[in-house]
Each structure stands twice: as C-alpha cells, then as structure tokens.
Image (cartoon, rainbow, N blue to C red; front, side):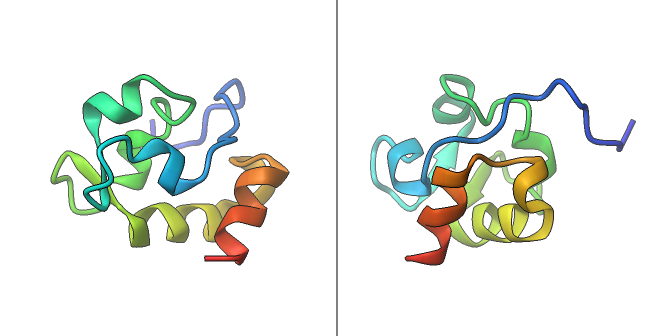
Length: 79
C-alpha cells in the first residue's frame, strides 16, 4: 500500500552521490544500485522514472529521520 515500509533502508546518500552521471536526475538504474531503491516510487512524484533534485529534497524534507540518516539530512541542508 501507500504506507511507508518500516524495513526500508534509510537513505544515507546525498543527491549528488546518487546521480552517477551528474545529469541532475537519479534514474531508475542509478536508484536501484543504492539505498533509495525502496523509496524510488515514493520520490518520483510525476512518475517520469527519474528523480529530480527537487523530488529528492522534498521527500527527505517531508519525512525526515523516518527515511533518511543524518548524513542525508545534513546534505540537503547545505545544498
């Protein structure tokens, strides 16, 4: 369902570290390699199969510590 899975891995990475090709989006492939694969569907608000920086930031801002480790939270504060 739409409820957050409690077992979901926390996001530890910054947007920049997930965006492997530095094109400003996290693709499905980039997301699948990483700790955000479980979050991808929730983050991808417009369902274009890629996550923009705004989608990433918005998601972490909205859910905070329930989805992200301190490092990811810090990374969005400084960007």
